[in-house]
Length: 219
Image (cartoon, rainbow, N blue to C red; front, side, top):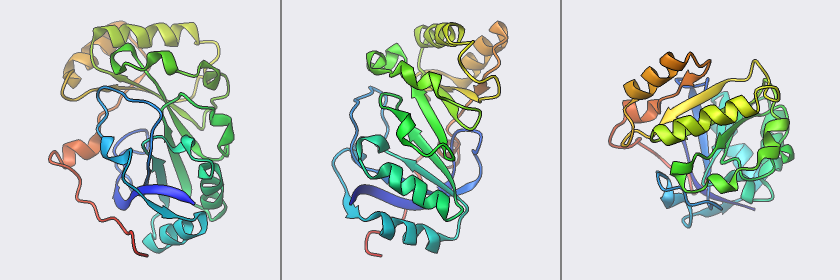
């Protein structure tokens, strides 16, 4: 059984898939406590569903893209099975993970969107650097940045691992919306001529007061 916080249809808000309709499965629980976390409600609130039930629910939604997020999906043992089961059904599957756990457990057909925690998160000591060695062009890397220190840290990591990271893998710099204005981060990226994507949380632009959600707990 998997602990699920919510399931609903939305517009994908981040990554290179931003703007596409998707089914969002938010799994409950997290092993980190980032200071800017906007989904703390997912830590302890959940209902339980089997992998088979979740796959059936996703099929009923009739959308091609499925995002599995949290919390932190990889703290649950059955998450890899859910990912593979959805892929076997022909879905395009995105998995957002905080980068502290082993991503090789996930089916390589999935798009693994991996965070690197910057100092401002309060969790930068928890990064699992081994993950950077197994990322492919099918995956994506994300830095959530709330100040200049975080930006310089992200640049340092990209330089340190430049010969390891796949050259065609998207890299996202995402500003913490209440701490760093996107235009300032954009100026830093342009000045330093970084080949990274400025990644805004599109769902927060569309719904600044929160997404309209309908959770299907009783299917």
